[in-house]
Length: 137
Image (tube, rainbow, N blue to C red):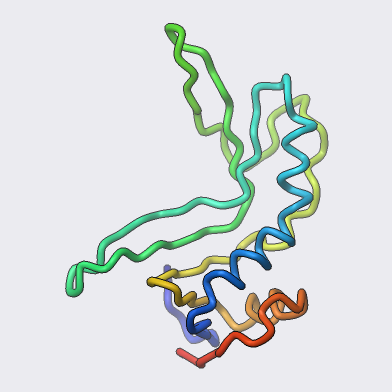
């Protein structure tokens, strides 16, 4: 995750509230996949990258929110997922608006770090009420 001069906050012990807010906001994206049945495509609204902190050995998860298209293919009797890109494949219905497109979050244990503008977007859902927030940068 790139660090610039933008405002960043940490949601202290806020992982559960963060996940609940994200799930609520992405409900339309997930339900869109039901309309894709039979096309062989799937719209994945987030990508996770897992890394170990070299100093502490702790697992750090980076989540990137966007539109990631995947195609389900059958090879030798096995189902395989193949990345199809960031643009909608031809012939699929128009995807819904992705309310978190462009958001990136860094998760360490039960803490979540993200840009202030995304925190404000999630806070509007009311699901982050009671979560302690610290300014990081």
